[in-house]
Amino acid sequence: LAWRLGQRSAQHRLLASAAAALAVAAMVAAPEPAWLAGAAVACAMAARVPQLVANARNGHTGVLSVGSQAVAVAGAAVRAATVAFEVANPAAVASELLPLMLNLGLLAQLVAMRGATRAHFAAKLAHKKR
Image (cartoon, one colour):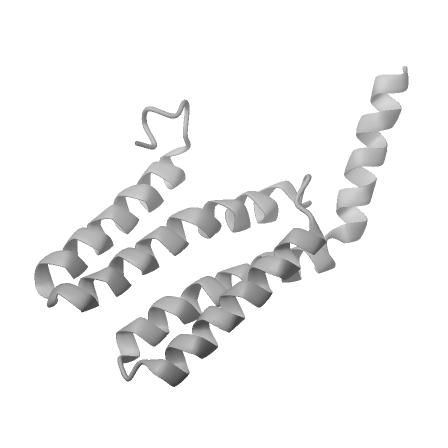
């Protein structure tokens, strides 16, 4: 799928391939309920890791919103807590903790890079006014 969505970096293709391989390995190696946890881990990685890497590479977070990311963190925390209290499956709990950690990482980047993001957009706006 990553190859069909346009030009992607080698790192992005490698990450997508690794996530797909992890999902397939989880499906093959585990009983039915556990492979769902593996698929969730692969999806969480594919959804957040490229953004974390892009932010680090760019030095700013672009148009990401602190408010929407805070809601994503809250939702992931509620899901992780619900699974931890209701399910006695460590793989299921881990599959909910990973998205929480990745969302927290994005939120931390938003807070830490807010000055650089403001400067980036101020420079972009100044360049447009010329």
